[in-house]
Length: 102
Image: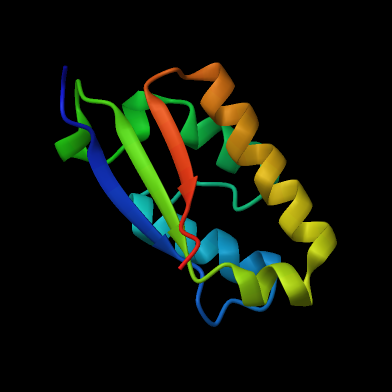
């Protein structure tokens, strides 16, 4: 079993979709051409060729922390974000997105 490469996506202090996209781009080291929209995030998460270089050939585990405040303030956006995480994980079996609960 190959040890996954772990990326922490800290959403603490995020108040809107733009912030989530910026934080995602930074945490995942996405290229400048990353579109900062839901489809682009799903595509990037499910495309190993744009994963951080240390993840090459390894599974990727994205641990989402600090999300409860964003979920409370932007419940509709948070619902879409969860759908994006789920879709990307279904498209790329080497990707796991986990929500930290504490």
